[in-house]
Length: 406
Image 1: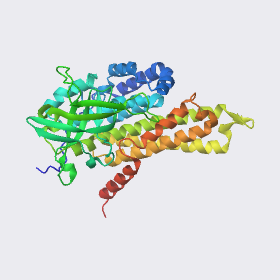
Image 2: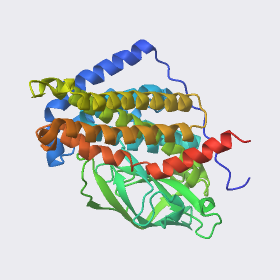
Image 3: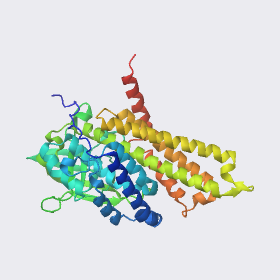
Image 4: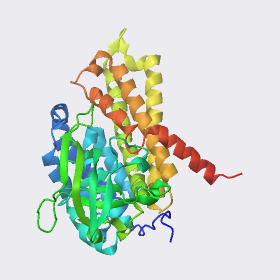
């Protein structure tokens, strides 16, 4: 079998829950964010405080196993349901969704591409949040161009010795493991044939003994996306056995695993963007009806109406594109184009809506006393994370042409 061939993912399990179950879940989470999260967001976001208490509550809700199959103890949610949950939470504080989304991208790679033994070992630990983590792809000199990574894994006995540095890794400090993309054959042509994926824990899950060679670097300061930790990870003579940690048990498949994990990640970014766009629209609409100029609410001025009309249309279009991508993912179809479309359009909508909401608020929108200022800082990340929007447009075009040959 050619090493360049995309590894066959395990079939996706259908969620065993009803529409009533989904509505009940959304209702519970909606009341939680309104009652427990909303009163503390402004302070915690401003001070960049990690939300330990909220993480424990998200464990109780089962969000760390949201998309993991029920056979491993997860909720087995459809991507469509998951996206609605993400949007709902993001309306109040987008950072919270990053904590479990990065984790679920790691879990998705294990469930889709891991060996039976790896699924049985890792996934129950991921479900409970006993081990939380993320996806370690980006390096100081390699972001969108994954084939340019330099982290090396060299065969050593029954395992591998890993050396390299990753950066901008969500859950890098508070998490306990990452799905780590490395090069096992740096001379491969094309380079993707020499890339492999490992589950890399900070400590042995069985003994709790820290793994020597895995070091957490500095916490990275950011414009927005506060609360969640983004960190550098350094690997120096880091030893892992192949049987438990090399995903799928075979080197050379890591590039495709990373791309497969990004499909769900991009749907998540689209859903987060929908939450931001919706909140910006809600804040702008409410403010426009209470703020008066020239003797009437500014919502009655045509200039503001034009903005609100465009914001509402963008938000709804972003919702529909996200739902479309999630349905394709749930159907087991190739959905890189649909996920790319949703991520691209929804993130641009979030950024534009946040900007327009600030303009509608005037000077108050620039104040930290109003949530619009936070939305304005959060939205740009959506255009960058899980693949830049420039790259999304290229991927969309390539897929569209491929699907529509002359």
